[in-house]
Image (cartoon, rainbow, N blue to C red; front, side, top):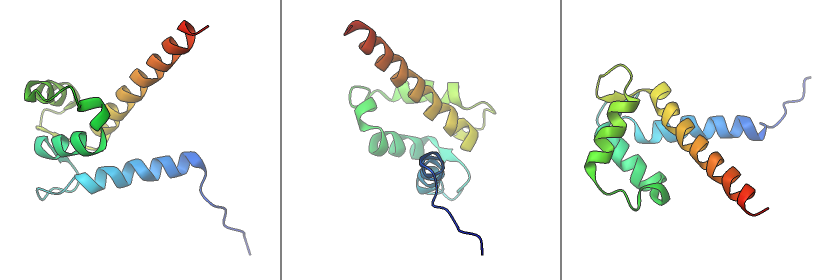
Length: 103
């Protein structure tokens, strides 16, 4: 009988991203996409540290237009991952700059 191993940290992160998307998508009936309203809820509840100084809805409109590659005014999972990837890159760049300046 094969031993079932527990998920790796990377696998758990992937599962978390999928669960996070599913948690916020579908409040308006379409569970495969985030509407602008759902994106706003996601940003405010899950990314409060990033959005605390960005209460302007124009910023949300700009983000939506930039991320919404198929122009359907919703974010599918790929477009959602582009948001997460962009934020992750920005955090990584900030961390690298901060580490470099402390040396």
